[in-house]
Length: 158
Image (tube, rainbow, N blue to C red):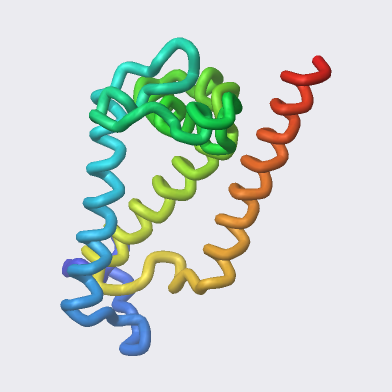
């Protein structure tokens, strides 16, 4: 049995059009590793109980948007959300910033997809096209923006 045979011995070798070059495989595995490094960093952070400011543990300054406008920015809480997810606190993560949780989910999917595709030498579940990423990132951006608008309205009128 080789790497392209399933448990029943059936050949599952990818067709030539699906095979990836060594360079592509390296880029995919490298990209996956970059995502997993971000997850490892998030896992080492202590989520700020306020839901904001966790990024300052990385030596970054406070949010400039909030500093100058006295308003949270649309992405305030993304780092805290990722840290919460890495600590297994999913409900709190979604409550802190749904857009950040959605971005983490997309990153996790892409990281696994890239790693497995790179190691196999063939696309896992096909090659993702730009439409997939445009739709996914637009959905995350729109969700983040709408929740931010809701928070601003609640802050002023709630």
